[in-house]
Length: 66
Image (cartoon, rainbow, N blue to C red; front, side, top):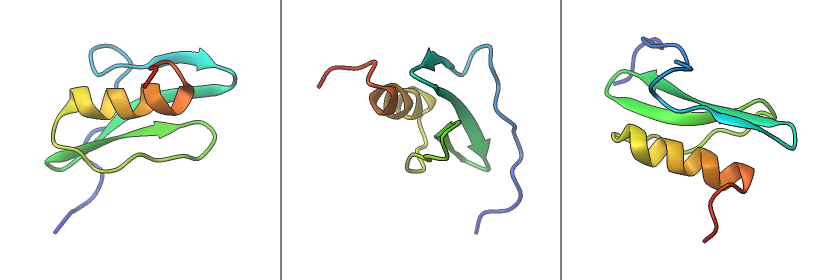
């Protein structure tokens, strides 16, 4: 069961993609999970690994080729 959002988006170490075409993404922690969130309203899937959440956000902004 997930509770309230414990951590708010951290812009230092958790990874913030630069504003790419109006899509700034941040990593938000919620309990044991974290997810990427974008200024456009997009939200990535819940992940346990911050690095994977950062990759999700980078993929959303088109920063990662794949």
